[in-house]
Image (tube, rainbow, N blue to C red; front, side):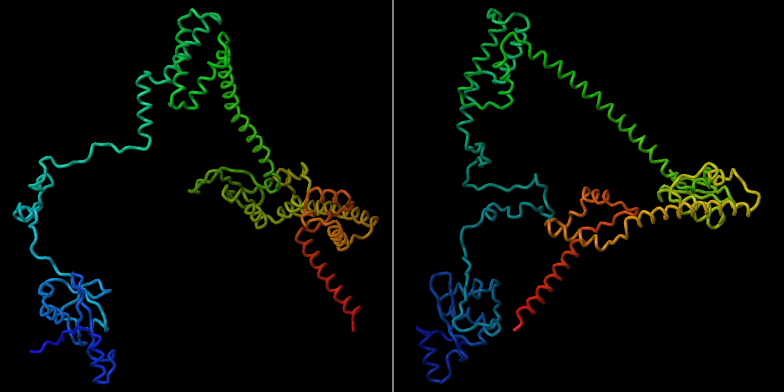
Length: 493
């Protein structure tokens, strides 16, 4: 039976060239082409295959070449493909082209048996019935050729960069005794005690000897490589700078205590001052809410029992005029808005609503008689008398407004007619000529100056910075157009 895989000649390129020359078909379009097989060794084998050749045929061809292990064992891989190839796959299915490379990784049979097979505990974590053992009952075993004492974690500590320096410092501390800060602190305390007991300059005091010894020890320590912290240096400065016999240290402590007590007293008094000031502010702000004359037409009453939901801070009022006994609520959530009271007065008592409108339009506070009428203490006999009273109040208000308009007109007539456009034009020209910024017109000092020199009854209307900016830009555009027209006329050919 002929093999579908033809064995390659010594030179596959020569064979393909001769075959293409004899048949007249280009070798790259021929039905047969060459591939290369890379084995585990360095050798590379070339085979001539067809598109219908399978991976199994390649294995059998390798067996005829003397590579029986590659035929029986090992996976076949195509260069660039990670997964092993199936035996039934053809070259056409794998899209193999001429001069493609295949790789065969043969398995090594035999070898040394594993330790688990030797000792018979390859399933050391399972019981005979197939269940898992506890971790404490698992016997992992040891290698027979290994040491009886298995190597555990090393007790040797890692050697750091500054280990030698650290060892040198420890040796110095062992030779010198106890740590330095304790000696220094004890020397300071004993030195201060000796200063209080005897006069300065006495050396016979044993406390002074202790202090001197501690001082010499600190000098010896400073010559070494031991580090001294900033706190230790700060503690040692008074003992070196302040002479013996002086009592500066004693005087500082009482002063600090006095300062602390003084500081604590104002802190306790500050909340009282703030509370008092806040109460004053509240007391000053609360009358401002009563400036609206609508409060004179209503009386504050307790909340009705029918109202189930009551919020803290809400107030209830009943109108003192008319037949309606409706209780109105002014809630804190609505910031004590009086719109409900005004609407009730307008719907149920129109005459009193007119009276409230007259009082509300005034800038001055209502008189005592007007307050009595608003609260209902002064009652008119009939409605015509009430309307007559309202007409008199209205005429007085109108006369007052007419009089103010007359004075204003007289003052304006003396000064002449005011031209707002001319004022803004002069203002813009001043800004441009003096190279002033647009925001100059919004400065408080500049506006105060213009208000002072403005003697008219109406307030001065000063344009904002944005308005000035637009006017100046428009003026620049107009000037540009004028220049263009000028040059067109001047230099016309």
